[in-house]
Amino acid sequence: MARIDLNCDMGESFGAYTIGNDIAILDFVNSANIACGFHAGDPPTIHKTVEAALAKGVAVGAHPGFPDLQGFGRRSMAVSASEAYDMVIYQIGAVAAFARALGGRLSHVKAHGALYNTAAKDQRLANAIAKAVHDFDPRLIMYGLAGSAMIEAAEDVGLRAANEVFADRTYQDDGSLTPRSQSNAMIEDEETSVAQVKRMVTEGIVRSVNGNDVRVRADTLCIHGDQPNALAFAKRLRTELERAGVEIKALSTT
Image 1 (cartoon, rainbow, N blue to C red):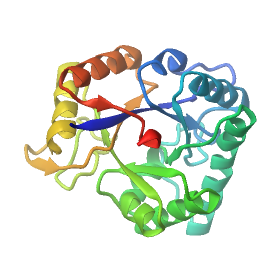
Image 2: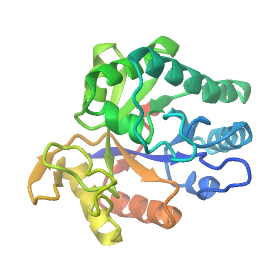
Image 3: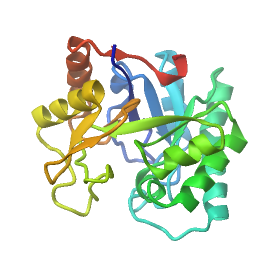
Image 4: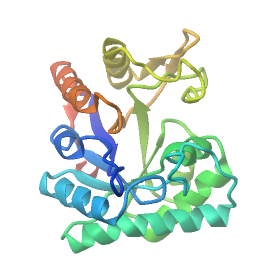
C-alpha cells in the first residue's frame, strides 16, 4: 500500500499580519512546519500554532529560513556554512522550546524558501543544515526535496531523511523545482495538482515542464498554508488520496 505524510508550512503570521488558515488546516494534515521568526512568525504565533498542533495530534516541526521578513525568506542570501549552522540551530531552538513547554517534542525540521532551494543543490549548505539538525537532536527527521543534496546530507550524518514532493509546483528534468521567478513555476489548476500528486505517490513519477517523466520518491507531500485556497485544497487532496487507497500517516509514527 502506498503511504504519504501530508505536511503544511504554517505559523507564518506575525504582528498585525495574519497569513493562512492554520488551525483549520491542522484537521487535514499530519505534520506542521512552523515558521521560526526569521522569514515569518513571532513568539505568540509559534506558541499558538504549536499548541494547536499538539492538541490535534499533528507532528510539530521547525521551519527555519533566511532572516528575511520583507522577502518572506524567498530571496537567496550568501552565507557561510557556520552562519547557516548557527541560524538553523537558533530557529530550531525557538520552536522546540515551545513544544517542550507545552508537553510535547519536536518531530522534524524542514528548511524554508530560498534556504531550502539553495541547499537542494549546494552540498556545503545542505551539510551545514543537516549537522545543525543532528547536533540539536539526532532523533529529528529532516525533510528535503526528493533526491536532492539535502537528503544525501541528512543520511550522511545519520538522520532519518524524508523525501518531499510538491502538489502546487512544477518540476525540471533533474527533479528540481521550477524557480518561482519563472511564470510556469506554480500549478494553479486544482485538477492538475491532484493528478500530479496521485502519480508521484502511487507511481513515483512526476512529469517535468519539458514533458519528461522523472522518478521521485514521495515520503511527504507539502501543502503551502499561505496559498488562498489551502484549506479546500488540503481537504480535496486527503479525500482523493484516501479514495486511491493511499495511507495518510505521519512519518513520526512509522
